[in-house]
Image (cartoon, rainbow, N blue to C red; front, side, top):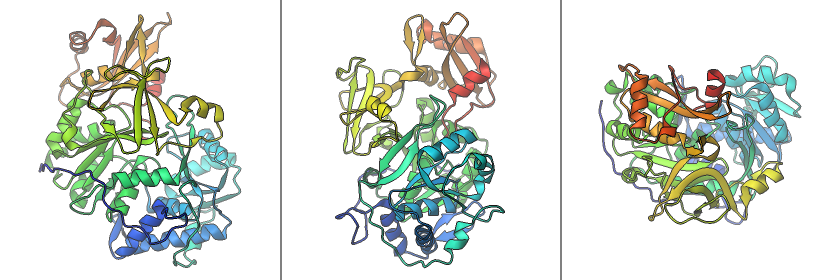
Length: 528
């Protein structure tokens, strides 16, 4: 395996934008992206799973044609277009076209049942639902529950209108719809892992554009981004960023570690985004030692706690290319940490999630709302220009979470004297054992440092006596046997008694949510 250490710069470059905009100088991310595509129309910018290539000019023309078709069908500024799509070129074209036409978009995550999907479509006041071929099975389950004015598919379907075929008859000439920074960009959704039903968040164009501008770091070569996690989630942001920087996006239908490694070598991938559990799968795959990974310049991780031991392993494979970006659906980006800062470890053993990004303020407060000094743990509050407007049609929830511009994140952590943020855990994941508060991420951090443990998830479960106990689900490392008593002694020697798991569950894989996070609700259901 070939490895190469590269020093990265994370300074914001000047971004080329169209000469005119609709809102006193504001340029939406879509307009900026289309402007970039127009500069090199022959450049392949989308590489499909079947190796088919789409050039910048073809992508730009498809967006303009579909935007015209949407407008012809009555889609207007401020309306909602919901997207039931997978990792396909049509998914990107549909999102860009809908935003270009002035509509807000609602991406519908995979892994949700029909009732949940129907709820999200309905609550967003969907005017048009667009479905690509990868989600036709979802459409079949969803259709009896739908009450939308318009429905179309992004490809041939025996019982629906193929809007892409209709759009082929439209002109590819550029169009302009007045869209400003305060217009809605999308209605995003939380993962739904706490309540079982995702919450809907209203986001504006201005904050999203500012996040992309900040993340547009200079690169030695145009980025080649491997989109192997859902474009409906964070992978969509990284795809936008790669195209804005004059690079390309290599699409894979979903995450498979072997396929991802093959694509890294074959396509000379420079940039990855993976949730930590998926990164662990990549590191554990038997094909890794023989894979040429020398093209990789940036490995960004986030979305769930990351093991320090595993991050060190990542550096030994890819070099100094680690980049983390902490935030929430409610806030987008809050902090980031670059390759040269990955030696900063907090008192619980976790890696820092970095310092505040430009335009972000952080504070840590106690349960009474008092601001705590550096070093003291409490709930993290954030004020950021990238924050949501609020929860869509949920003013009471908005009032509880968003106060005077500050978002109550629900995350527990502390700031050090240099402004680096360290996360302890999610507040709702905290386990209370005989009056002692236990953070699952601390135990996960410890267990993944043991050579016999490849992956783990720690969670609380209540037993018949209503007391809460610590449970650990573990995936053994390849070539290691599982000695439960040894793992119990390992934790007991380094933590207090309440931290020692009451029960260990040995699994072949940790169940993940549709967006790649450990699904602890599924674990509780399966193991109760």
